[in-house]
Length: 445
Ligand code: PMP
Image (cartoon, rainbow, N blue to C red; front, side):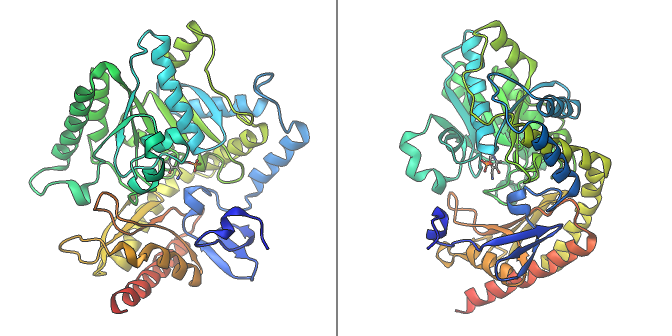
């Protein structure tokens, strides 16, 4: 009997034994083409020799140093590299071990910032519905996915949720994308005023939504309008780039395309590319200054923050991305991938929307295109698609469950940046065939 906790739960995973490049192998010898990089993690694919060599070299030299005693060369170099390539204004890096940890640290940093500058009455966060920021209690509090929050709702810190930027379902037919973005920013402003502007710490949002609503790319101007609203009331802007950052959308940070600089940004997943667990918070100087002039410390810290081997792996991932021109590749091949998905799935009567940017795409399924009605959640379509895709040798990342009575089933695609055009074509073909097989079965049974 296995003692691994999650193998005793519903939808127990298979046993993986090896992975190389774009391909996974399980214990039964089956191979799978990786179209999701796990959950948008494996940006360089599997077994990349440069990252493995960097980790080996670091383990031989210094495997671990507790940050209350030491920083390390790879941590210093990684922080320098991240700031060198970050949007102008970001100046400091706080290294953690994953995405939820990064969000948790950012929320606490934002709160402590206001305590340090004499505004301790700011205690409230505003975030968005249909969002995901992680599974720790603070991250769940700002997350806007009702079913994930439900069991824990009574013990979460206070947060208000406003509308996400979700044009497929929420942009009115009589408004332009710009007007829609403006309306959403007005809604945020109303929420801040309703809460009392002096009591709001921060607005938290994924720059490009991922794990709840199947890749939500913002309409042009939305984040600029949001930034203006935040500035008007001294509210910090925290952008969660755990999934969409680190090149996933074709720029290192997704907010580069939106022309905004957040006060705090969170990154993880693609930062270590899956080779090591690592995440980070990038902060503007005023946050660190407030702490260094005030109490002199950040009331936080986990045992493995700034782990030297994780930092060495992340630094190697960064170097490969730049050396191999992968951002430009993701931009151009990403457009081609979108076209392939549209060709393979665009005419399917149950595909409502195909949206994305770079190597980050979502396919939203509907029971009927005209009404955009989701499938009955009891059909568990997303679970069946994941299973069918695996049977067809494809790893994709379907989500489901109606959220706020709207969102139904959708599939997230986040292939490694090394995917060839042939791989991308194969992904589109296998996904179309898997969706079709499942939807046919579900609608005729
Ligand atoms: N924020 C976002 C936007 C995410 O997509 C995720 C993970 N899906 C997290 C935070 C949490 O990251 P982790 O699972 O590494 O804790």
